[in-house]
Length: 334
Ligand SMILES: Cc1ncc(COP(=O)(O)O)c(C=O)c1O
Image 1 (spheres, protein in one colour):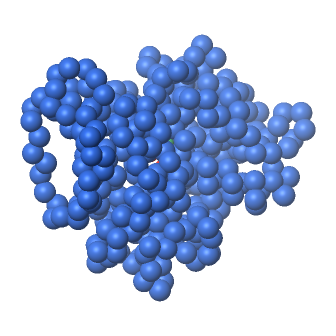
Image 2 (tube, rainbow, N blue to C red; image 1 turned 180 degrees about the horizontal axis):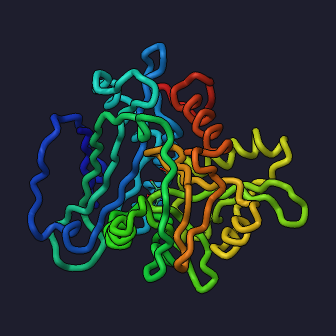
């Protein structure tokens, strides 16, 4: 594991790479009481030449600094941490499987370590990075998921911290997820407000491909970054690729609010082409149905289909850059 301590007086101390081990913390440490914790999720990939690559690490560093700053934890030099992670993954190279779909999952984490029950900005912190090899999310090919729209809880709200990757945002999401699972749904869908805006799916951003009612034009839509949406690295990559490759084919690419009502209407008219979640774990996760207000909204896949065209292409395009098949500025060779 990579570790780096910070104190208010001395700033960041010398980083270390040490054997994976328990942390020893006083029970009064502020992380246990007031949730001074933020984290990132990213992956290291091995290309066909055996080089190790990170995918858009600058985005993860930027997001982690935003998360840290919001909860009074220290920020860090993004390039320095990317370089440290590069050194770490090169040391752990043997744990990065070479096969397509496999990678080394990295979990940079930052916690407040001050021993105090007083509520205030931590005077000390610990940044650590742990890692684990991971395999393909869908080992036997895509498997479209069925969602349940949660109608009694919201994940995030304007002025809140749902756009930050704080541990405190995740624990409250488990019960709605368990409830959806108990009724046979793989994920829950987060809505917001009386308008029932579609926001995120489980711990992924959400995309829908809809054909316009009047013009017939195809639109790829995702919720805007209004403070209630996590700024997904995959979301940003999907949007960039869509603007690069789908817009010239006549697609409209939109970051705008859209409602469950709009999806339901498009579905009933046969205009909902497909829907998918996006995130580091699966890249894209095709959606078959959404259970909402007691009805089942079908998301455009035929019974024998597990994915739509856009989700399939996005996965290929993104993986080509992650694994360095296509040389691109998003891929950072360590
Ligand atoms: C709530 C939430 N939304 C979206 C995402 C997707 O973000 P990314 O594409 O950076 O993995 C994640 C996963 O990190 C998440 O936890």
